[in-house]
Length: 118
Image (cartoon, rainbow, N blue to C red; front, side):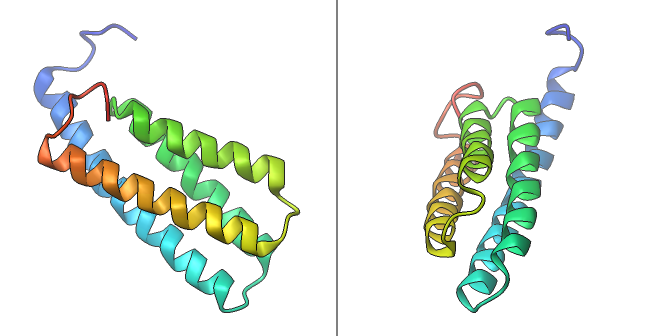
């Protein structure tokens, strides 16, 4: 896609929408972690988490939030690698993932980092 496909205003709109969407998805990951901790089926958790981190990776990449995209893609790879693992391992990984992304979102919203580095 051409660098000039979107106007600067459209790029900023996409970024704002992505930041909001990713924040909502992180809230969903945290809720999934709470359900897993309270005894929900690990397979149900994996399915939900896989969809959530895949969406984070794609939305962040589209918005130029490459570091957030990398965390999402890394979590997606983790799921594929450890899908049948102990629920505690999955729980810890996704808690850390959610916290990392929350910090990146906060930084992006505050403009602490450049557009290409978040």
